[in-house]
Figure (cartoon, one colour):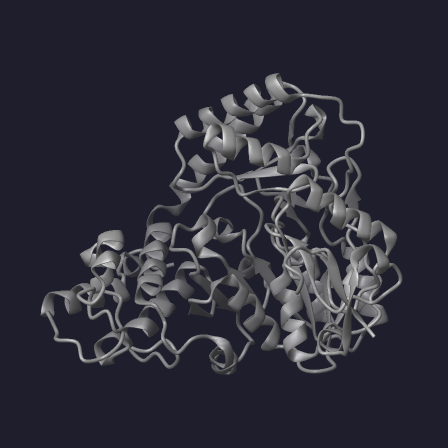
Length: 482
């Protein structure tokens, strides 16, 4: 990485130059630098709405960059040790889908863990690729799915030699990492591409003593959520491409679905955040790791909770662990994760990332302070003291291995009918059902519905999980194949 070059921020610099020119706008957006919408100016500020502009020659065009955006992408590629980088304004959902659509077409097989984000399965709905799931081992206490074990990937490759790619979560939402280096070597030996979903792994490229990044491991493409741990604005992400991938073709795939009216607020935030991480990332993420480890130790001293970390590593299903993830098992105090999540928000004004059936996740990043950590620890101690109860009747388990009957695309577009959820046992789902976050489907189109899945969905609803994916907003009915 050329550190001197990384001091530049081409998009930000071009916007600053543009702002000083006081150009009269006869283009979109229609608010005309905020003059037509004073309430928007009051909310966001004059400087913000003043650079909410459309593509023009001095500012380049994201669909076909030739100047400042191209320069910003080259700097991002250098910072992330990639051959090429694409700035994405449709979130990491767009990056994951573009990554899959770049290597898969209708009828192609892709090997992936079932605990993927919904964006990956949505991509299969779009392109018609066939999933070959490597069902991960589940930690029976924590109720979370673990990483892909190399022998299981090898078995899937042997049984599906015609598969075109392998997708790896690096890391999972909970911080679990697979042996991605070995998976890359194995897949490449059989002529398959490797895709890394690194929505929760931006910091792996800049921090020390953290799990290996996708590009360093040799993955062919990687989707990076800069807005999560990297500090850019929500909805801004990066798609990385390694050697041996046709970047021009990837750009064409991106342009199939990404907006032609890219937000310069998002683009400039990616540009500035990349510069910040390149220049100060190692120092910043050392502090993040230190804060997370401190919080982990303090929470474990409360009693009842289990803030897990590197102690989980077993060299197979948990090859490594991302210590910046503050994942906490809550059933030891007799409360589901979502119940602790609600208490923290409603009673203590603390908003954490998510709560599921067994766990909560507090996202620690470059913007956190030690006093915030102390407040979280204190609130958790208070909750344990005030609300602790017997855990009788609480379910455990976040992952139920599915039985795939039809491809996601075939099932999604098939003729369907609506049934009360309790009457769907044995049917094939025609839609998604998931708690969001984390956005890992409990059911995906084409999968068999079982009594176990039905009970899990009802239990998650009753506990207060935010359910998504169904046509029925109340999630009382499911669309099933006729």
